[in-house]
Image 1: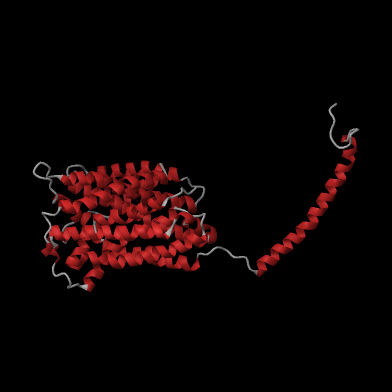
Image 2 (image 1 turned 90 degrees about the vertical axis):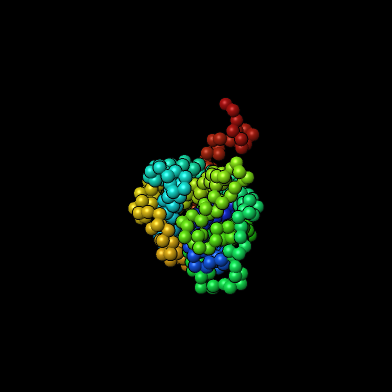
Length: 401
């Protein structure tokens, strides 16, 4: 059964899926192509995702009591299950990519001597326990850690005043349109993962106004972070970093007594990233439950997490290969984040009873009526002799013996 989601929770879920993954990797690639105007790369991505989620919100209004998985399976039993399975496989790959990306990030920046397999295994166990709590635990963690991440992102610019150099943003108006387009290409696959939200919440809770707020806040927040990265670090260095956001956090210093403020930011950011990984796993388990009703989602969390753990090391040998795969991955993401929403918007509609359907139902009712009349007459004839036996002197009610 779908859990109810409020407007605030829907905004935070959108931010969870769009901000966390985008913060980790594609900013360096966007800066490499778009230079000082990398923040403009979010404008095309923003417009495309608004259009995609608007179409899905219209689809959800046609099925107010069902999520998108359920409406697909009920309306098109075969093709709906195929589409749901494709989305499930898509997010299984996203889960494997995210858990490997998170493991590489922790291994490179925080725990250099710990084997990456141990780090990824620990992340997988945490994700399994979060998912077993259901969507409520994911929403609760989003309300806590995404709010904390948002507050940190608003405070960081004031701490970077000494490190910011506005000359890194010059020339201000010499925009490389082709470079901005390439930057949007690398950002799109990560930012567009918010497409998963209508698949796990029912149509009446998927309100486009809240979705619009979530997309807008996420895009503005990411534009702020990428602008801070360019202004504080510079284009030549930021475009060659694997994790530019982490390097931005390392620039922060509070007086002379706390020069590793990045650890405090990591303590607030890592739980949000783990929640995103748990949501990927929850999506896969939820999709399998909808496609195959006899399957238990809780029982499948462990095996699916192990499959994602294996695929994370099978698909990517190292962090560089994971970093370069973003260019090809966008081709696959476009199918699920743009093409399928258009198809669902056009074809996924509830069944309508036409004139022929009404005639057949009327005929069935007419056939049922004489049968019901015969049954009533037979029951009356059976009850008549019994009435004489049951009726007492006062006629009608059973008298105590």
